[in-house]
Image: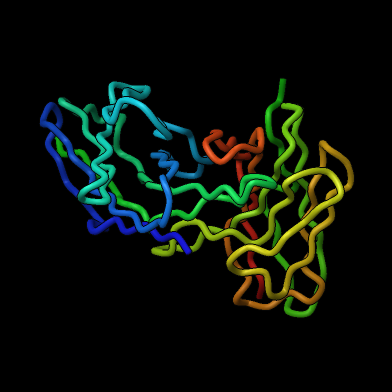
Length: 116
Length: 113
């Protein structure tokens, strides 16, 4: 079974500084990887996804992520954070049984705090 | 288009009561999912439906039942609610391929006293 680890429960970053959120996954085959963001009291919004091709993927709101198979990682980055980026971030891996998508396995999330 | 809608938004139950959470989508997606979100636990899959007429258990199915009423609707039922089922419940849909994005509803916040 697949699993996702987000090592950092909380991260505090100053506004304008760069950001990297870590994600490690365990999955036997080629993974389908996602980053979602959740603002307080809201549902989840997709930031970006990877399933094949270029290992550096661009997403919305200026985010990018790099897939590194050798490290089983899919870290999320942003060169300069804004106060509006404060939220909960979830990394997820998707499974595919051949008969249909079996749902996503989520990490436990990283809470991002932005300091003025 | 509304996307994915969930009703109700909030609910308080007493232990032993039953209720059904409703989810509807207008995205013409085949696959639908129910997750629960608890602090520090991320989201965990309860049940999913890869297509109309099929349902399968996810990671935490105990205490829940589901019905895929038609392509648009996927309901989650708690027959006898327990305090451990206090959570935020999210419905999601996808086109059905492993790499497809899942689209999430706004959630239902359930408290069981």
